[in-house]
Image 1 (spheres, one colour):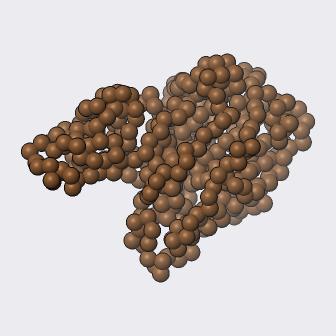
Image 2: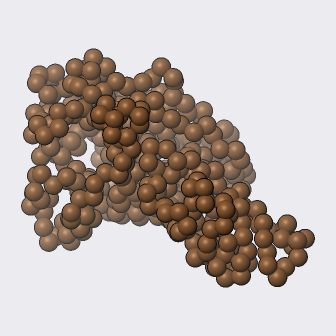
Image 3: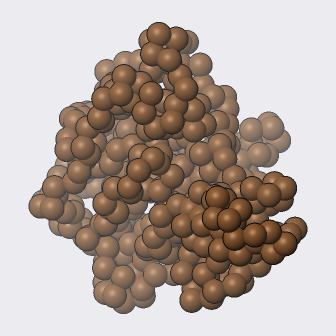
Amino acid sequence: MPDGSTTSNSSLGDQDFRDFAHIGPDKLAGRFLRKFWQPVLPGDELLSGTPKRIQLLGEYFTAYRGEDGVAHIVEDRCPHRQTMLSLGWIEGDCIRCFYHGWMFSPDGKCVDMPAENDAFRDKVTIHGYPTREYLGLIFAYFGEGDAPEFPLYPEVDPEKDTVFYTKHPVPCNFFQRIENDLDEVHLNFVHQVGTHEIGMVDIPEISVVETEYGILRKGRRSGEGNNVDRTGRIFMPNTMMVITPGSARRPEWMLHLAWRVPVTDELMASFIVTTRKGGGGGIQPRAHSDPDPMYYTEEILAGRMRVQDIDPDYPSLFNVQDNVALAGQGAIVDRSKERLGQSDKGVILMRKLWEREMRAIAEGRPIKAWRRPVEDLLEYGSREVELAGS
């Protein structure tokens, strides 16, 4: 089979094509995700001269910056005696193993092998992954063959706008978080503290449609006051773009980009870029909340407190609310026990698209060429702009 898989078509059943949860390199969902660029960590977490071991997609990798400051991602362990490469040190744009000094370039070639001859050195390689730094985040491509074109978001102008980036864990499977992005109705209940504050109280009428890039999601409301339509774009396979309404404390309507990346089958990370139009603040990390959202998440899931006990002004309240709702389904939800309704159109469509693409991978066929049209750009910054584009 393509992509180095050893799975036989004859051994696959319908359940395998609906197994969105398991994301190892030999799983269909994992192979699908690896066909796209994925964020791996915020750029400010990778210091020059200090390699870092990172985990995502059910695997470990080594991240480091060369002496020129450029970020690189290579495999986790030295092929000599399997010591973690993150224990080593940086020379130029290469990483040298701590154990016996074998040194590798960003593309995985062994360029120095003390105590061994050059003929042996030339036979040894590791995986080096294409890497790109963008909007405060480091991205990498972990799939087979050449990396696809890197997706840019022209709506974000770091020279003119104020761009905040962050990463936070969610203690459940990543696909539950993706499905939540298709679920406009949950805003009225999970996030009622925030939505009621701005006067968005109508239960929306949901519509979804497959597009060239993924799914266009709309939540229709009455249009009275702040009960406005909301439009979201889901870029396959795991990215969301939506405009978030203003509030009394922050009247600007902001652009929200979020990548839902699995760490393990039962843990994921949201990488988020939020942009305020204008201001010229450039790219900067979002301030950390105190206490950390995971503290509240764990306390609530353990039954020691309730979401309603959190100060409504807590900056990461939305994160905690989502974490609790999603982890409350279980680390990996049992979808066979669900009863979906008409408001779950987005969830149903997303599952159909993933199942279709995973079947194509299993059968050796190409997946859809997911691309965003150049004319598909969002305007944001005020309620009037959002209403005009809804």
